[in-house]
Image 1 (cartoon, rainbow, N blue to C red):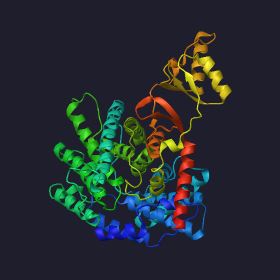
Image 2: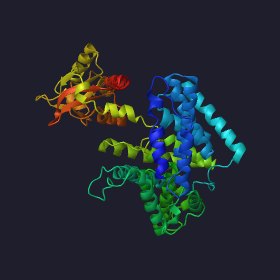
Image 3: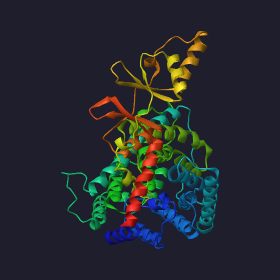
Image 4: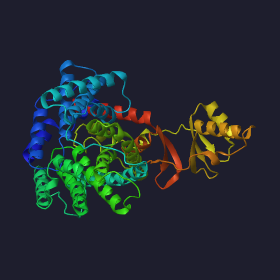
Length: 522
């Protein structure tokens, strides 16, 4: 297994960044999907605690990339072919075409997809599902029992399940990140693995999984049979379910961290099913018999699958549609919306507060991360990209006067400073407009002379001048921001500049061009 991993990394690369970022398609070997298939077959066949969807998606995307290089398409169409290949892989693997479409649009292509992108992905998922159904029948990846909402009180319980699923999703994703850092030698003092050759890491991961499987054999492999057993008879002993939950999280993290080839979808659904079954069993123990009618634990296991999957891979629509297509029961939609929505929202709030990211594609077992450009951009400091041309307004300025000043300066956003020139908040024209119209509507007269201090946003996400641009870019992506104030390292209220997304993109393009130009000279 280590030899296969080494061959794959050295001869075919560890990511597909160049398939996305280059203006022209870079040549890749047609043997790449074959090697990936072989590595995944060995990993999953020997019991790695992973799923088949990660390698399947990468194989599908690689086939799309090969078509792109064959027909010499543009960068935009090249990216669409990657998304179409990923959609076809998910659609065929789970027999869920709509989930495949939304996975490609949510995770691979991104939110800025066009109508042509959606149509290409739809056609790709359709053809893939049609061929899969002709070959293997119209059954989904595994059979789910019938679903029914027992009472309207259950919406509260499903909301609670979504909250708990967010915690488990965070533990799952952070466990994978910790395991990767551990095997890469970034965690010192705790059995540092720097002395172990990288080619032996998969073997070390396999040994770890095997030792745990001696006591908990259910964690081996994809685990669909265990999931089906939980779904059709969710009344497992609580001790067994808790053991499965913890062991699956740990062994999936070790499997991915050690370099075994597989994906996180199937383990996330396994974890969600065990969590939902635990939750359902606890509800039956807590709620007196006959007081409130509730669904059996298997129903909560189904909803838990989607909630943990959505929170882990940041793809709520994919998770929702995947469970809907598997059950083919419209009644499950509302419970899924409640639990998935709560799970994803809480995970995003955690990521924003802790300034961390969820799993990226590479950490999901899909090596399509834009790692090369990010490596180049990590060498660019914020001081090189920020600019000092920004509007500042005093906190004591009246709201109406501030609005007129921003309109005259043609600025949508301004930094609010106190009397000591320290950053107090950020205000936008939308903030001023909402305040003015709200006050005018309530009082039926001119807006009172409120100060900017009263309406500005005081909870500010900022970047330090000595940080790399990649850190600021992560914070901006979490909140969907287009600019960040840059502060001094020793004082997070002293503004030294402003960072804009457009300037980051320009810096990235220039840095990548310079790097490739130097490589061509060498």
